[in-house]
Image (tube, one colour):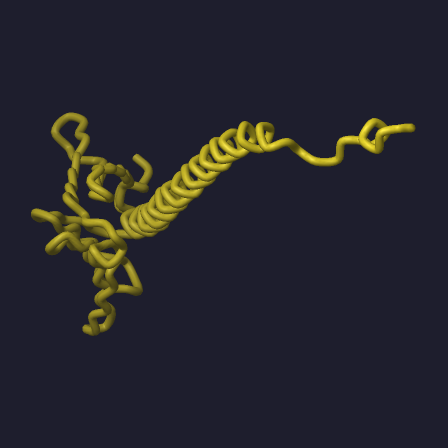
Length: 173
């Protein structure tokens, strides 16, 4: 007579196998969760950095375009004043209490727009304007306006530089 257990195939895990496999699976799950969490944090930081860079790039392009179109330029602490040849009559960039503003004055009407500031989860730390005049034989012939913007984001300072020359420099000699 045959014993019924000899011909049966093993179709389940033993208790010992389950006790070994469960901690291994738990370790794998925890490490996968940590990897996914790290990737998500990295994605958020990269997205924020890209957004900030894109915003400053757009502001820089606008500022460069307006400096190049200016007939005359002057600066004081934290402000750049551009006298334009047409519409608008004047453009002013101003840093006030951590926010960079853009004023447009056209036909006596002033339009104000906020470019960067605390509402964007950043603070503009500095807005430094350097107007360099190059001369030959004591005659001024070119003005270079360099604007340096320092921004504080999540405890880190990021700096951006914009350079351009006003239109009056585009004459031939």
